[in-house]
Length: 483
Image 1 (cartoon, helix red, strand yellow):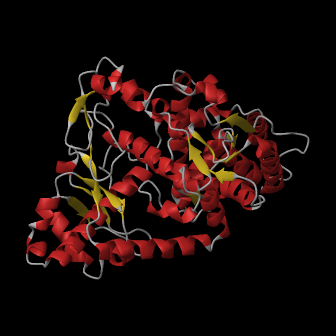
Image 2: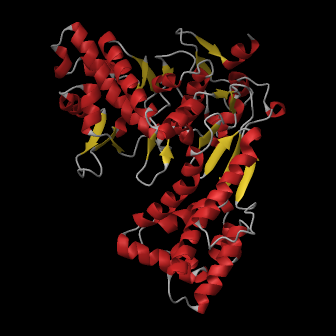
């Protein structure tokens, strides 16, 4: 078994006062436990898409630390802090959030690596804990369905498509084929963590190709235990797979994957919730009625972002994806009279007055609660009620499936939305522009003939770079290409 880690920490940990006086077996056990905490921090950073690196603090509760590191986990935490390997934020709120940790800034430029566990006792300990987690997870029908369908995925290995466009020229030394070795990128590479994420998911999915047992997922570094948030959203391994990597996915039968998603999901749902609120009011002004009719039309036609961009110089000069991010950020942020907030208030005065009033009265998190809870009532409830024989995976406001069940799931989502917003959505509207379908997988003809290393070798910027071959021998990329 292996863990994610940072190169060059073993000696410092082994020679620290905490481990120096221990017998060999105890030292290895403690070394493994030290690395496991490093692994937890890195794993959660990668799963949560912290592409800036390991800068942000990661919450890890004391129950988890005690479970894996033992009752004396505090001594391990303190030792890693003293060795300047991790940092700790002492702030926590009982029942809300735990203490948080991150890698020490001095390690951010170090090479990432895989650490091979040394202690048989700790390996057996992890296996027992993973079995417990698997058993607990499968006792929930929703999470069990997610695990079973995740285990049915197959990744067509075509790394050319999986590298982020802006990062392709920065790769010089990468290899995930052998464990417990360095993962090296060129010096000053941007988004080293991003590249690590892509390769980590790629490697985990390739390992999954030859295994249909859902329990096997718990042993993959990219995998994390699925969970259901307080708002009803399902978070799991597949929700974190980068879109570029997702293109290489198919079922183990070789079936291409398609998706049904909701156009402008979060603003659409918030608009529906506002329309529901208006319907409950005894008095609705003429201005509110006009704005409600306008937004309903834009919702039905899937034109919310386009409408905002067309009616605002501030948003109109930006790319659609950037408008989407800024709009969602503004809707969910604390109430401040920012330029984006004021601009939205000009275009949609009554809708934004409702949003801002809720924020002032209940705090900004109420918007996420309303939006995500309503989203879960549409997507999670639809997903839960699908026949277990149907291959499907939920990704928040989207459901992935095969062509055979695509229209069936789309129709279920439409009917569920109409049921939840009865009296708001007209029965005559088919919602064909609200719930859209598209192909996720790369078709056979789109797959490249280039191997990972051949692609890198053809990049003039890195032709003279070296690959680490994991046997302490170096070959130039040109030699690898010719061999």
